[in-house]
Amino acid sequence: MLSNLACQLIQYKRIVTTVAKAKSLRVYIEPLITKAKENTTHQHRVVFSYLKDKEAIKELFSTVAQKVGGRPGGYTRIIKLGARVGDNAETALIELVDFNEIYGKAIDTKVESGKRTRRAGSRKKATDTPVSENAAPVVATDEIAPGETSTEETKPEEKPAE
Image (cartoon, rainbow, N blue to C red):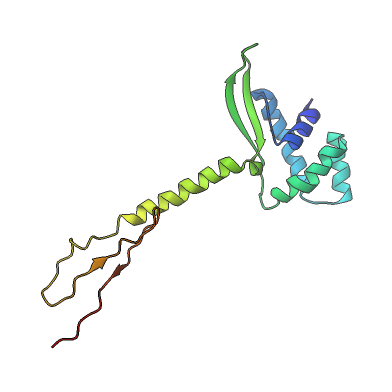
């Protein structure tokens, strides 16, 4: 059963199953993915002894191993979905972490936007600073694209003193 679930997970990158099966599948497949990072004949034979599916092994050693090459572990993610209608069993979605582009992009944009909002608080307005009679007024630029922050202020060209 775990062999078939592992082959389907490799083929489709995410599957829906019960929570108990998903947790046992994680323990079963993560060492196989670690073995697939080393592309040798011996590792092919070891993984084939677990999966017994040539297409799944081909996909594992080519596509999946390249994506997870830099990751030290934690190749799968389990998301609980709730109870199944027929028998009230707890269901879960188990997926390969590096193959979910939508979830990964949402995390990156939140981190970047958080950094921008922290820096934007240090921007001073031209009316807040005291202006002496001899100094040229400071003019803030209004040519900032939406979503960008800038702390640069420009001074107009000084006129020569007469």
